[in-house]
Length: 136
Image (cartoon, rainbow, N blue to C red; front, side, top):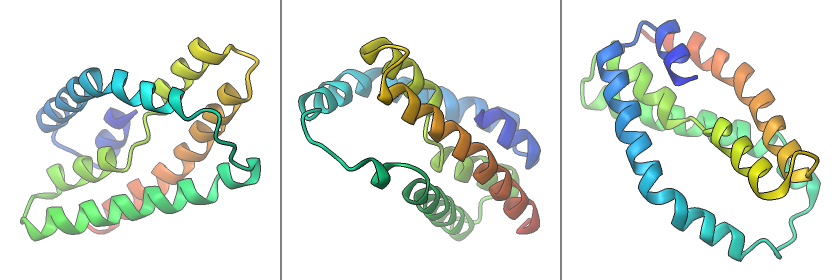
């Protein structure tokens, strides 16, 4: 999905490819320890109404804006600033959906929550695309 957001903001495709590749390599190394940590704390109960859209939306906008400001302070061009901000604000819901289904099953509440995340992310990212294009 990050490639889509980058394309919509006229991001540099070569930069985007390198950025996504490095990010994926980090995920390959960090994935097992992160899942181990999360599986170790699954007995912690969080109220359902705490999990859906508002914290996710706030976090996505916050990270996008912080990354955008940092990129501009470094005097990066729009073609790099925009995709950097988009991937910084990404939540990797595709991976979350796959892991939730693999670990807890297709009918689990965990799988449902990760799908809700995807449904929230798309309209939020479209507003960030519009914002990035306006700030060009």
